Image (cartoon, rainbow, N blue to C red; front, side, top):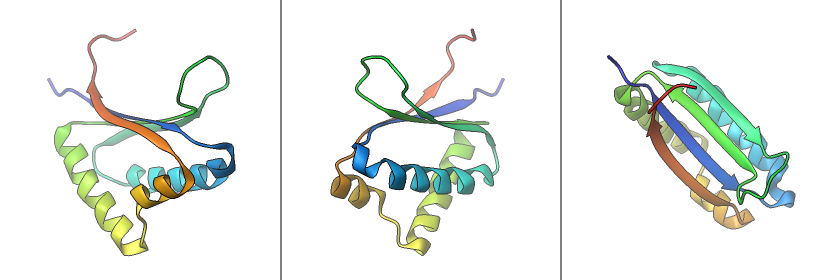
Amino acid sequence: MTKHIFRVDKFKVPAAAQEEFVKRAMDAQEMLRRQPGFLEGRLLKKNGGPGLFNFVSIAVWENAEAVAAAKEAMAAYQKAKGINPDEFRSRVGIEADVASYEEVAGL
């Protein structure tokens, strides 16, 4: 049985950077949607609650091999476009918590 991989990236984005952040995140998700093994993706914005992060990006992948291939494809895409996500986050004050998860149980 293949275990799907869930990439969950959480961000604390200052108000002044939210428009640019959303544009960049949507561009990245559009590129990822074209990758083999991509199953589903979402960009969520917090609308309530005390949580630290106000944006969450979720991508569901067929397996770990698809994630590894997509990571390489994203690095090449960013290099070709001159995109440096770490520099952008630092420049505008975005805090990030990024990780991959596997499903324990369905709801």
